[in-house]
Length: 422
Ligand code: W6P
Image (cartoon, rainbow, N blue to C red; front, side, top):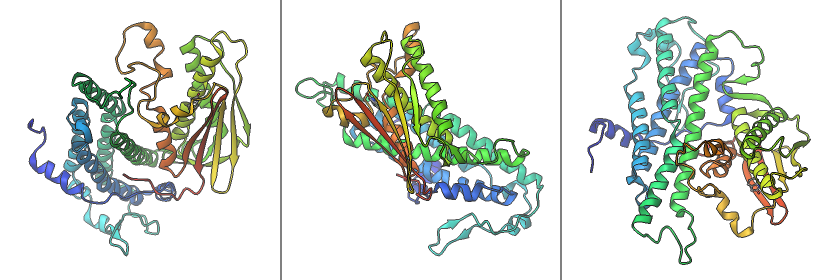
């Protein structure tokens, strides 16, 4: 046992909060609490995050300590766990508004944290009146709080890469130990044990929720200080109440094609045609939508170019069809990239499906730098499905081996599905 970087008192606080339930938030709630920000709603929102974030971080610290198959012992996993503990400590040490000398009367006037019938904290009461508009002490606390959570978000930027490194460290450990965990009797590589696969799903889902909470809070606080931004009227924080699917799809297609051209050195590359009701507008986080479409389109472009060759003079188009239903908006992305053998389909959702040999090794060879962006750590598809599920959607892949693949991205229009918190 290596001595912890953190004090026993802090670690005790982590254990305690890990036992408290996390509070899921729906897209609709994010918008209700974030539209028409007032000093009261901003403060209440910040206090909710100051309460909720340590709970979510504590859950992850405890889970990172108890991973199956010795994954917790890998140095990269320990680094990630230290980031979560450090972020917990930052929030733990952050004073409350009272200690900033925010007049107690003002806080009382804004009401104490409310509880509902079940006793759960309800920080948000849109019917409460707005009090003072200019309380310097409150402003100081808000701005220190925002600095704190912005730093947390930045600290955790390299998480996906570092956890992937940790999984690789475990595989290398198995290779040295000639463990049967690595290869089956025929020598074929095995997918990760399901316990590790499910941990990664839970862990990245939780990360999406934490970053949503921070991104939304930071943006709401900043926009509450600025005059209204032209062109941002339909934004509530990072949520756009009228996200235009066609616009986001077009931008994602441009970005994916640019990467494809650079990677394969082809001019233009396969075309991406948008068909159907592409002008639908619905409530969503544009950056999430962009991320999902970009990832799927890159996969389709890669399949088409590799099936038909870089020298092909007319690649088959990739088709993006949009359907608008009462419950769902479904986006189907169809490619003629030859499909995936049926036996390989389950592998699509594992955190190892990649054609790249060892994508984590930094390479100074300019050609591999050049070729880097098309295929990542093989985490693109599972994480894209987590983004879809985060707000109640889903992602399915149907393949016709020898012809092509259809990806169905379902996004819920109901917007009241709660965050799935592991
Ligand atoms: C393929 C493999 C794949 C994965 C995800 C989306 C589209 C495609 N096409 O051939």
